[in-house]
Image 1 (cartoon, helix red, strand yellow):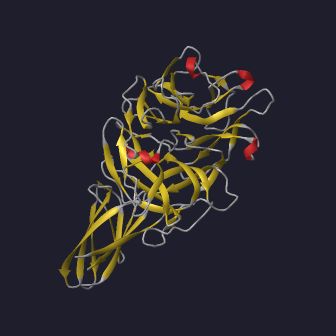
Image 2 (cartoon, helix red, strand yellow):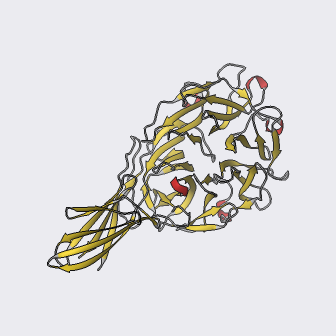
Image 3 (cartoon, one colour):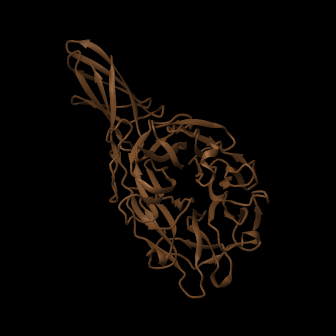
Length: 470
């Protein structure tokens, strides 16, 4: 029997914000992304600092500046609940005095072994170079006074400082002044060293993540030294081999190479465009372990791209560009083995500039953080924006004629090839739930040639509708 197609219904709660219509390939109107402004910021090609605490809350840290219209210059943070509610902005640190200087760069954020949040940033208050750290033990409601946590060559006042925790030890990464500097531990006497070689005169746009299986910190950066390019390298607890992402040279080194580790199991990943063409085919690079094809959207040339951690070892891949002048953001998620991907979703939103695509999807939905400037309205601010999307299901339906106007539908529901247990399949008033193998069946009444819609629902996914012919 024939399967006559499928379409999606977006079932995710959209936050209030900016909206533009999507014109997907072929001219069909699709879903619209609704990004909400989290913070005004003059950000470039480094993603905001964020971390998820054990209660499922996603915390975001960012610089504030009175020249951007903020109430204070310093570091602020906010919390996004597991349901996607954006909490109030908390001014974690204000530096406004004539001798107090200001923070510089984009703050990093991590959860310490104690469960406390730690934000790290550069700056030179009263001429004392950082980096600096502030902490919160109450979920971001209140923050400590700043502490100078730098040591040796990490003592610099003008760099973005990323922070990760490797087997209980905080690891700082800063891209500044000719190289990538690493520090293991906080405070004077901590071990510091330069990760990149001394001839790299312009290394920056740093990102970092942790391999959940080994605790190793892996950094990424753009380089203008020699052949340039975008690189990944294990930075701690020991140095690993530098790996160049196979990004076509036409993209240059100004883009960000966002990295993400799995929530469980080995592997650190970065998405990259596998070609430079009108239709960009995306791939996913595993540090030290080759790459896998992700997918493409006809006519979509990727201008920016990123990755995010998903649940059960999965990885999200996001890329954005334009088709016929209309902005398109493409999103997909891998299976548990990071070897196959869900159907690619496309959402519409046009940006004047979009520098970074990052976020965290380990709770199921993707909490997407976008750094850039919307194209409309004209007063739209530079800043960090937030949107939430759900993953996609796939289903196969076979039809067996039982006679007497009865038909049996055999249904197999998967997520990027992984069986989905507990999904509900319904058609013509009948419903059934998938077993651990992702399979179930329905018996319905009808006539040969009838068109029937089978609806597949699961609380963690977009609704899927399959049209079949009896």
